[in-house]
Length: 340
Image 1 (spheres, rainbow, N blue to C red):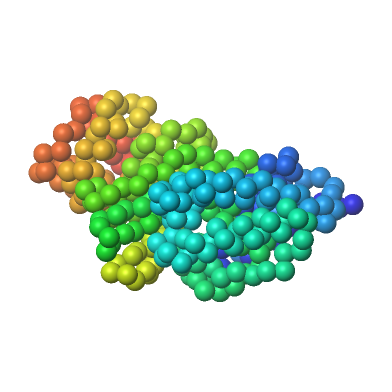
Image 2 (image 1 turned 60 degrees about the vertical axis):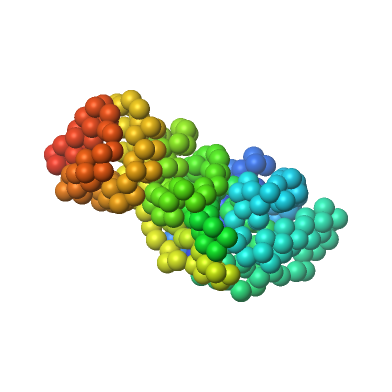
């Protein structure tokens, strides 16, 4: 027997990422260790001798467990249209919110009965806006939804019945090769989901939803990557519902490493950090967006611009926070911090 290789890629970027993450979770949950190489897709090298057919059997058996958990959560939260429900909470099209769990239930029943997965399903806009409407095989569909459910932080902004938005964030390790535990650790970035309604205007902007998320997410993953200078990025896209029509915004890449580093330094060296960020987001959206841009780009001038805007808007800045921001700017100027 040889060390089998699983190659994932060639369909569409986001579908491939979610399928790779779902595959990783299923393998890791069954104590199958692997390394990952990223080039044009994902190459999993299993770190023990095992037949490829056995790997497929393990994936099928683990999918039964993962889909059962997802469908149970859907049955519990569907009527509330809660963000805790992977389907109703994320799919703004009613048809998708119904079809996705129904499709996964068909796959679940077939796997549970030991039947072949001779099915294919259309990709909804929430799972991959660049591949919407295309069909994929049942296994890829199920693994991608497992990856989406477990790895992608989601924030929903509801202005009113005629305007809604869902921001989907996908953490990416910016390295060509890494261990299984590194990839699995990214699931820790999705510890909670919150629905933000009308008054939280800042939630209409993905970069501010991310700032809120990083501020309020307590996890060892981000400090670990920061302290070990491990590069992280984050890809994001937004699905909009406006006057009965749904469309997707242009995907973008955000500098998660810089944001995590800034927030880690702030939490360690300052007090009232949560109150400061929450107040800033509520009082001045423009200053908040300038601050995020300053952090992402390591741009001292943008930091000063953000501080001036905060002063004009009378955003209260605790002394410890102000001191740490000025120290952070000084370190950027002195090239003491690694560049992204």
